[in-house]
Length: 270
Image 1 (cartoon, rainbow, N blue to C red):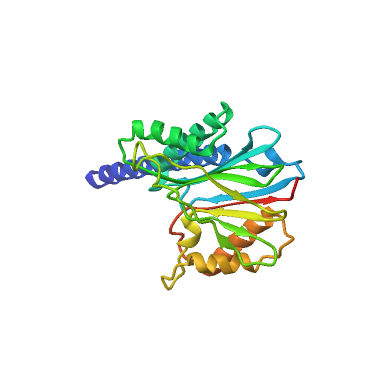
Image 2 (image 1 turned 90 degrees about the vertical axis):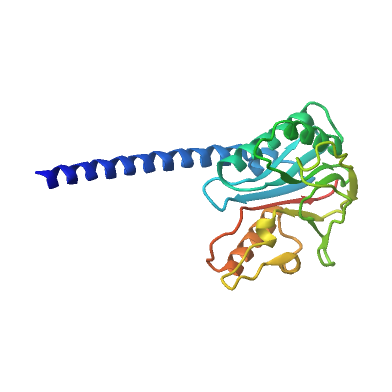
């Protein structure tokens, strides 16, 4: 009788643990759906022959700390941003949502200088950051009539410009530290002019730091070689898919070490 009582007690404990695990799994899955639902689809800016765009975010876990966003500020300007929050999981995802929302809010309120958008976001996020998280971010505003790109780099990996007949080149910048590292840092606005047919490819370090089974990192040089092998007439979305597939071939099934995000914008001309 004592043994039976003990077995019943253990069975109830096991059932309670299974129920708690299922509840937690359901909450994480709901969080993943909410996070992915916050990321815009390329269809939201489709129909403009001056550019095409592709984007992809793959979290290392169910919920990630990477972010991307894009939207047309008006008929002539496209805003886009790619960011990477330190850490992973729920805290990083919440911080990501705050940073993304602030940048979008400032841009849609009429702020047209991308450096000021990043400065305002940095000041607001850094105001209350008990977990001491930070965000690397590359943000840009593309003039769809001229190809002029105003951009701001806050501690993010340099993106690549793909130009037909030339190897991809990294976008050099003065930049600044990640958001929330220096509260009152004055992020500069820098300028780059795209030529007709150029593709700007922005990634997070989930690409350059993708690791294979032997412990080797993909690195910036291999990333550049992958982009150089992409046909010059493909769409921005095909650039994203080619790079993601190449990363998958490199890691060859190894456990992902970080969230992975790729955003590509092709300027087709006025």
